[in-house]
Image (cartoon, rainbow, N blue to C red; front, side, top):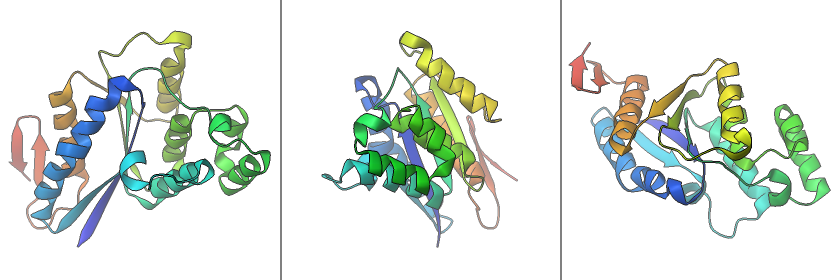
Length: 200
């Protein structure tokens, strides 16, 4: 049985609880059922689903980055301003130094005290074998300091698109279409569109 391991990364404030619950409580089961018909197992990995509670901070970011590289799909959802600066999450200089040694492509961002979310996004952008999708919530709040705007710029600068999503149904449709179209479906390939299934 083949697997699709999707790493979900998103801004983590109160406004994103509904979207994250949408994945945990509905979309992952829907996709697992759809893909299961073709012998494909769908696994959703995020900070809350994949990492045991009480994991030490210096291990959390490393675990997330390794999960991104080990998976085959990455979904970044951008809502309101974010995040937890890495140097407030991993405080000891020797641990930050080791993190830069283990992930040299992130050394500059770590020195600039980038957020954990931004490190996940930047790392995913450099993982060539990982399919990526970035959703930007249309009705997000104002962006003090233009942090979100700068993050979107970095994503586009890397050659990736940022797809605008209007509401929960729109998110479900876009993500389902993306996952099913990327999946190695056996025999007849069903392409999911926003209007239903088409065989190809």
